[in-house]
Image 1 (cartoon, one colour):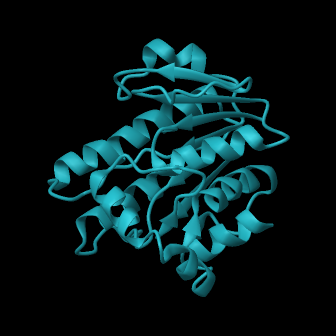
Image 2 (cartoon, rainbow, N blue to C red):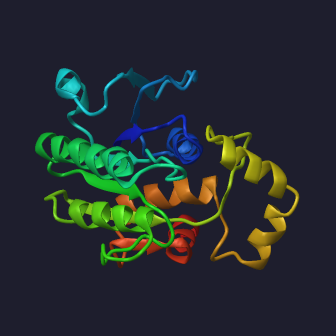
Length: 222
């Protein structure tokens, strides 16, 4: 398969990229983002594009892909709803609408978050926006759309988050995260499991469109 990967420099994206490069059936990975990964691999091609809200100039490079792993995400901390909506809903839908036009047989996998509100009317701002984004994506005529809702993710293989608050959290909890994963295997995931689960749903599908942490773990271990 040929894979498009958005935000290969983020914590989740780094894990997904690693698993794609290791996968026997992935022929090509094109990483799309505002900055490069700094990695070199025979399967990897990088497309650095400053304005992801406008991808018209790079449309020829976004064709002929079987899957898209959309790992772009921002923290809602200290952010107004309008700006969070622009960076979450607007950016995701602008990209997805272009991709479904160029690749109608594509499987689109979107990384959301545990607690996303598909009713779109809850009190928590970020959850409403994420839920609205999930719902809109599922209306697009891709071959399939899967929504991943991970909670706590343990970064493995030297992977680090680019977000200061997340780096602080993972630095503080590093000694206990392996224990928490053993105690709560269906709640605490790893970057490896998430990456493998994304590949699994493209290969084999999944019994549901929205995958919570336990579902992601099951798919990643299948």
